[in-house]
Length: 114
Ligand code: 5GP
Ligand code: ZN
Image 1 (cartoon, rainbow, N blue to C red):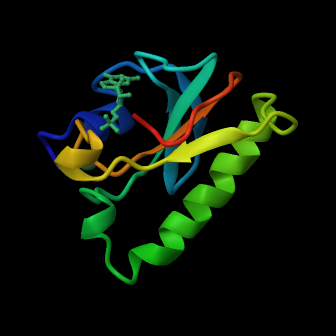
Image 2 (image 1 turned 135 degrees about the horizontal axis):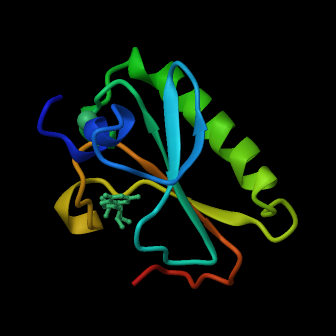
């Protein structure tokens, strides 16, 4: 999608600190990290939010979560654990309208979220 920030990051039109890329996914460090480790993983297919996914997208997002936990382990989060977060639409604080999974770790998180 031409006016989407994350589609532009995938295309290399906007620079990012890349963590991982394959045919289906792109992963990069968040520009405003909320933890010692904070990266995002996104599908190259433009999906607007969790609530916009189709049944066909389910397998993509399953593979995305699988890749995310491999990357989390590579970033040293296996022992302490991590937050795997989708913010979906306005009430949850979604600000970029291309589905993205946040992976945060390296510190203790509270519950419930604020
Ligand atoms: P949301 O609030 O939509 O769940 O998360 C969007 C995330 O994207 C935020 O954590 C924000 O810091 C990050 N972000 C926004 N613009 C950029 C950018 O240009 N580059 C990178 N690396 N992260 C971005
Ligand atoms: Zn997009």
